[in-house]
Amino acid sequence: MSPPVIWRFFRRLWERFSLEQEKEDPAAIMTALERDVSFRGINLWVLIAAVVIASVGLNVNSTAVIIGAMLISPLMGPIIGIGVSLATYNIPLLKKSLRNFVVAVFFSILTSAIYFWLSPLKEPQSELMARTSPSFWDVLIAFFGGLAGIVAATGREKKFTVIAGVAIATALMPPLCTVGYGLANLEPRFIFGAFYLFSINAVFISTAAYLVAQLLRFPPLEISDLRLRRRIRAIAIGVVIGTLIPSLYLSWRLVKEAIQEERLRLFIQREFAYPQTSVISYRLVHKGQHQVLEVVAIGEALSEREIQRLEQSLRSYDLPISGIQVIQGSRSGTLSPSLIETLYQRTIFEAQKLTDSLQKLHSRLRLCESEALPTARLLPEIRLFMPNLQSLGLSRLTLHHADSTLPDTVYVVLARSRSPISTQLLRSWLQMRLQTSARILILPDSE
Image 1: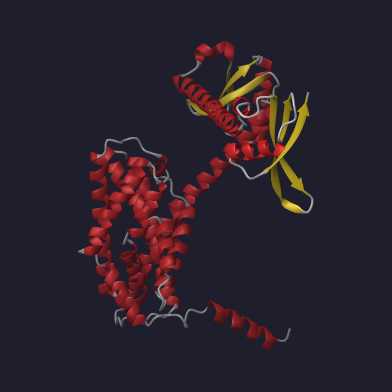
Image 2 (image 1 turned 120 degrees about the vertical axis):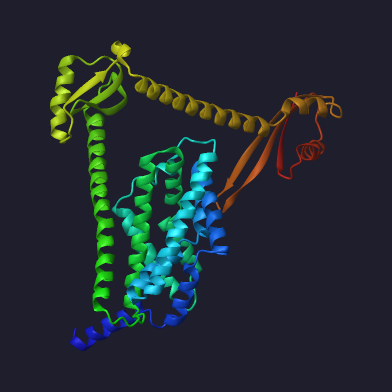
């Protein structure tokens, strides 16, 4: 390809990605941002309502309710305002955004803490637990979610579906409500884990807004003090790096734990493949400074020699485990309360599966009974006008055709009587009695 052709290709590619044609006037964008930044009146009441809804959803473990709360939450405004004000060196907007951001965070945590303090449901559900372990993937979600949000907000035609999706993906509201739960129940793990997740979302949504504002060349305010510009930029970079580093460490730990869990699962699956012994559960327990694999097994007991072989095989899986403790049927007295609870829960689970299977079988049986033809009741009724009829057989068949995909239903009747019967009369009566317009084939069998 010649250089001019390559140049035209990249120019057209850049035009396809360009935001200039759809971009709103920067002054109008800044006006809208300043309006969304403020938290007073309607915005504050909507925020409090969204916090209560999200807290209820987290409390009762309802994902749909949590999503609804995220959709109506107005938290995005001051966060995007911070990023854009940093990009344009708009100190008044930056101060206003930070002030309203603190107000929004304060009222969100306060409202959720009051709710969880009053709520009788104190046990943390999975939706609450999910907000306590942030990682680098949350950084990616926040950054690209913020990127989509600010790009949609700068268009002449506001992409409200995009903005709603960003509100769900970045999940600003649930972490703050989880902080409120931690405060209400004095749980530091919930307080710090959830607040760090919220910080990740807020910082990287602002970072995305900052980059887009720079890319779209929002006009900066004239600041004669260059040292102030450098100081603002240095503080912003420091906050981003300070927020990013812990997430990288937590992600490394998460990946490491996932790899270890997979290796442990493979070890149990491959090495405990005994025909007469089954593994009920396994877990890692700390004994001093060492980790021991505790395995609960039923069936034929493993010998000490076999357990030693398993410990030697464990070394090839590169796991930080110093030994294996196999709890077998003959040693049931050594079961800890937690393992007994695990066995009990598994028994309950299996019993529930059996109960569900029986309910399905009963449902199918009732369906078959409802669809069964009432031949035994039909014979006495027919004999009222056909007294010579001695026996009756009735079956429903499905007839498939070679030239059609739609099958037909056909009733086959075997009637035995002492003398010939009127097949037309019997057919008409059966069609009326069975309430069907299907074909009825009568095979008379006279004695």
